[in-house]
Image (cartoon, rainbow over all chains, first blue to last red; front, side, top):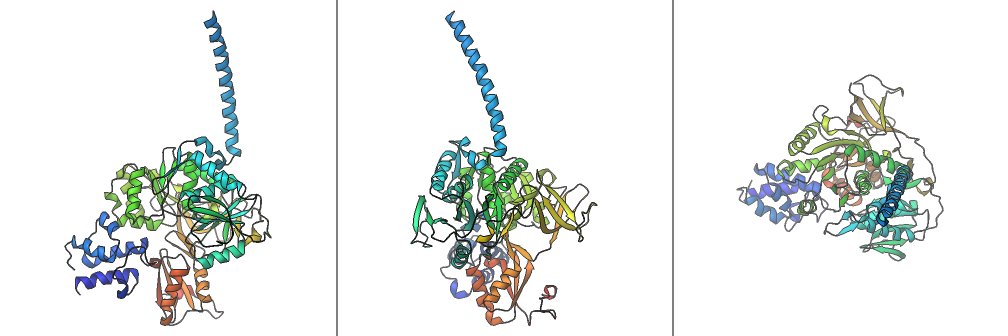
Length: 78
Length: 499
């Protein structure tokens, strides 16, 4: 599985949504991605790449695209 | 000569003044018992009561004045629905009902339209206080405005009577929109607030930041206790996952916040132990049982940070709180809900209803105190009812007590779960789904409800219904497909066989 596939899978499984919803997806715009969903999403991304995301990055991860930028900091190349 | 005379006059005046102020203090002391604290907010005059998320401030004097304008627009002994957001407008509406003659029913501003319609039909409130942009009953007369809220006068026929003691209606399960409210009195609120202020040692210089809605009893008790003390409330609808929450907390110097278990899960995820917020003085936890490891972890984190961490237990039926674990016993009494709050008592009864006197024996927890509410209302016709509980609450929680008198909750008698702090009645969820013609059974554990259905084809419609017509969070449940719902010969669902 490529890293992008892993990243997408984390979103789809944590939020229970399909792949076609990912592009342009932002925090708090769908019922699935509320604060509880966010916590589950962070856990899923951390597990997928075996990383620990910093506090500032957790609260900065406000969209599908923003998350891609942020995890690059953790030496994950998408 | 003139000087000496003056001095005598002065001394006489001073003595009179001392005498006067002493008797005034005594009078005031006597009045504390009789006068509801919401009617005494003026005493804090120019102190800041509320800070909004944009930094705008409202003093106690301004809050009292606006609340009284609101009250003046409302006819006596009427029912007001308050659609709550964590904003100054909501507090003004609530304070008005507390100070004045109205009875308030608190609901979330995000309530599903269908559920609100049912509640309006069932209770026929005379007024509804809601965000100005709302289209609900928009064609009716607006009798008062404050900030971004408006007070709409409904035109329902008032075919019911409100009991003179009824002050506040709160839901027990905000998530499924049951029309059932808990009926609270002024005495309930006064008593529970005084007790909480006492054991948490809340001070005038405290500032609490909101983490829960005000239509939720725990969130409301934080507002009550801080206004009682002349402290500040920092109001926002941000969650812990929002950057603005943390910047507001720091900018306004919050000294405390409370959290249901999932808030502590979030704090853990956010590495709270690494955060540096020196103004924080104490944290509270309630609204469900914190997993023991997490409780211990936060006891330790707070100890290191020089903060108090107080675990509490309560129910809307007891206004808010029934027990607390003193912060000093965090390590010796891990996993305990502590002892009864000041002014209340806890005891355990066996299946025969007899009190359990020995330690470490499981029984149902019974609470007694002035904060035990009057009972439930299921429609407007119940608003006339008086006190049905008479100070005794059968909690439905199973617990044991250790030799030192500390209580430990071990289970529940009733079929409900706590999902992110909200009580969710499993039978109610089943009924809601059955109305959609879906055969189902609900089980699972706290923060993880399982909805069992037999037809894969309904998976999407079940999720869609729960997500859009209840306040249950998508992350709070999962759907499992099973061959058939296990039932006894008499048709009762056999929950023990669900897996």
